[in-house]
Image (cartoon, rainbow over the protein chains, first blue to last red):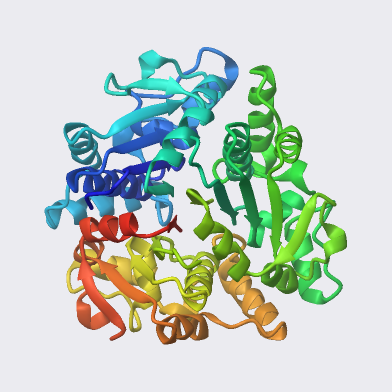
Length: 158
Length: 158
Length: 158
């Protein structure tokens, strides 16, 4: 992989399993020496927020209500059953020694994966920069995301 | 990006948010000078149809029933709540000055994004060429989609 | 496409329509002469299992219960309605002469598409190598998947 131009992931889903997949692929890419970027957009923003999504306006508060709890409260895309699916997945992963979302995100950060947040999504959901974890490098538009994607060897939309 | 070979998106989802993501990434790519193509397949076909999906046979009519309303009636992949999710998203986007789906699709067209529709999907869902917006260049198979993808720098499956 | 470096698909979804899309794109790529690989992970594992997901422990059995039936029992990502969606899709595809999942998977195998299964997913879901179809070449980690992706021209996350 001497010629790698890196990996660029658009993380749109905020489902537990798909955030898990995004962080796993990103950390694997970074560990293999590929410069790696994740562009968090729409529901994916949840994976890099500090606590809840809570905009000041009515709309922001409604989105906040529907998205309570941050990284540790994300449910899987299938079989959530009011939290049982998440509980079971965590239980299974822990019993198998698989890393949790917090650990995986930290592994990405430690391996130098670059985190960007989508400006339009944050505007619409009324999330401010202060609601994101400090490791997010910048809040950028889709043009920046496409430029990064164009420069990379591998692109995924998750 | 002098060396870009363009962007090729397979748009399978017909969810409001994912169609929004597809048109946003495509228009950003095209605006950045990347030759851009969207291959609409399965539920994604809805984003380029004129009005409803209504095949002549029983099956086509059943699909039509489940997919009434065209581009302006697409619900998001999460939190639709019988249309409230769509209403809220539109409201939030409008209040933030973010373009709607019709505008985004038009922006793609104006920027020269090429639209193709998947032949197998149209056959199965009993949708004819006449049910698609005239800007769709052609109805093609997966082989054409893969050829376009192979020639592009960036590929996304949405 | 003399310069193609091939196609690499991460198949995470186990939904009928998305497995269908994965096999269709993979077979189209392989038929066009592109070396093609599918890395099955999470719910996508279902597309290459022999019969049911049934781990020995409690967790494995719970996942098994939620995933009964193998390739022929997969429901679509939308409009399943307790099986009616799947039935309708199969009916429509059969009446249009479109291949079913078993045929599509066999076409991939016949065209030389390489199948790999995700080790972490199999550990968590308590699925053993013996539960997969013999055509799966190996059970590997995300690092191998990223290496294959990096070497390919086209990458999709489905």
